[in-house]
Image (cartoon, rainbow, N blue to C red; front, top):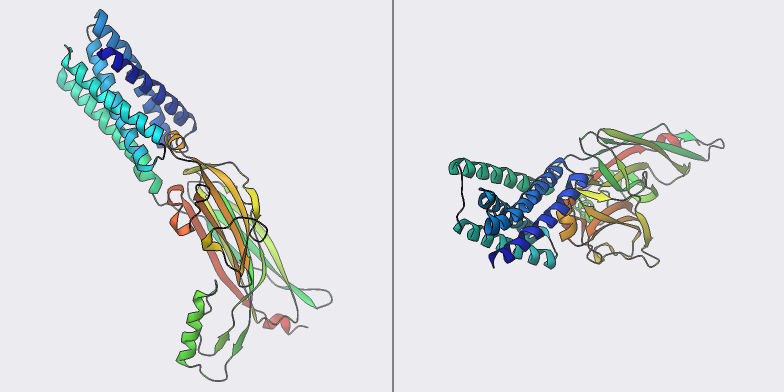
Length: 401
């Protein structure tokens, strides 16, 4: 009777761990993930040998240590299934896997008890116990690093640099162009997916007061910070008006990537009439990135729609003064365990713009559950990088007309 229960536990454990182990060994995105795959394959082979040893121990007794092999296999099955059960209960979302691993853990624990009560020959018990303890500690440490610590470890992020060139007048001296060099540098040892990027130019009207401004006027300026993306400095004489969007564009396609210790450079040009009412021009840039060792993404991201023409945007983004271009792509977990036990996630990128600025935001969530960027993404290494304002006065250019 005991064999009828123990064998299915061993065989199901062998198949499950072998399947997940092979996937992790060949496709995990981190080195600890590959190690986890190798460990799972070794455990699956151990449980397979344990299944054969159970049959020999109960019926034939042709091998003197078959009971010991069966006990080791049962112990390995119990410990590994218990660890996987903890992982699926912590971050998994599949009731099927939770129930299956729960039954296999209970079955393996019962198998350890049943095999232990039979006549098991254990040569050098202290050495065997020490070897099992050491193996358990190593497996637990690797599992804890891969499944608990590593997904939430903070890492470095790319750097966006803006360099403004010398403005150039048109031949008829009625317009001018301001060139801006954009560079994206990744000085870390991990690659990043580029979920979305934007650079935008803001025209600013800045007049000078004839006398020192009152403290109440400073407070009024500070109160404007919550309404606009750019935050003009408080000034004793300068009177800043809310900036107005002059130009905005992405500088890399959504879903591209930048490898470790790599760089990307491009240039954009903003043109304005020589009689522009603005006193200054300010450039801002932003990028939304995800670590390539935290998730898998098949680029490029697919265009999803426009916020003004049927494209879905979450409640936190809806604003009459803000429009968005929406992109979406399927996200894959960085290891086979989470890939099979978690529900499908999608990255949604909102490239948004309005009269007072532009931005890009990325959210990773299940379909229909897009939350604010501040509430999602730490598991997948989402980082936002912002640069600006990079400003220059236009007075020297406007005097040349």
